[in-house]
Amino acid sequence: MPRWSIRPFRTHQDYRACIALQEATWGAGFSERVPMALMIVSQRLGGVAAGAFDDDGSLAGFIFGLSGIENGTPVHWSDMLAVRSDCRGRGLGIRLKSYQRDAVLEKGIRRMYWTFDPLESRNAYINLARLGIVAREYVENMYGRTDSPLHRGIGTDRFVALWQLDARRVERRLAEEESPPALDDLAEVPRVLDGAPGPSSGWPEPETRDTPRADEVMAAIPSDIQALKSASPELAARWRAATRSVLRSYLSDGYEVCELIRGARVSHYLLRRIEKTRA
Image 1 (cartoon, rainbow, N blue to C red):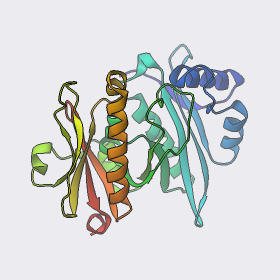
Image 2 (image 1 turned 90 degrees about the vertical axis):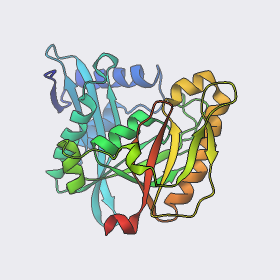
Image 3 (image 1 turned 180 degrees about the vertical axis):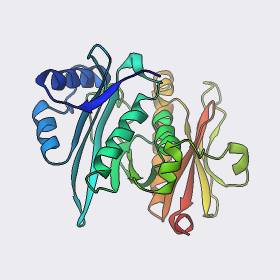
Image 4 (image 1 turned 60 degrees about the horizontal axis):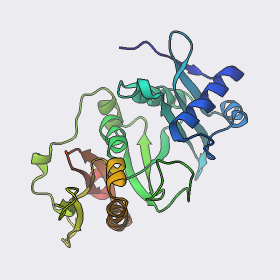
């Protein structure tokens, strides 16, 4: 296990390294980057601006978020997380989120939000399966047009992640005591959006199904939206339109997204009625 040291940013050198990592992740000159001044102020007001450092002091990843009040309750918004390319896939993102969780729990905050793209299956799996979030909000084109190549072609639709920091589900997922169900265990759950074989491209086509609204339903997404975007931007745009329509409809009707079950070509979100979840 790599021995990264996670701590708040302290020096101008720390902040400059964070800005450089933002540009390495989202593109040179990325207009949405978080500036040094905001990171400094955030720490004074209960926010988190921290990095994971290698033994030689180089920045391997960072986490940034702001704290505030929502309807009279203190909450934290996790605005940005990035991990250096050579450190990805080694659990550092989860360690940074765990550090952030501990930091805001110490301040008496029990609820955290952030956003993620519903079509990015890797991020969705980490958020739902490993961290234990749920999603109850879908926002169309939340950030408008950006100059990041990661967003090009399909806009910036987002789920709003809800991380209930002291929930038992979250504790079990972080401790790896609980895993998502297998796809075979959900064979009887209606598919309201699935992937149909494509006529020629080899990529699955979105197929919406008109089914009665059950307590649980499943909705498919491509398992690798960036590869699909490169191969067929038009098909990627059709997936965006189909998932936007289905997911917005169900979330506005009292469902939450609670799992992502991964597959080779398509992955599936599991949605449940919130009333059933609370019961």
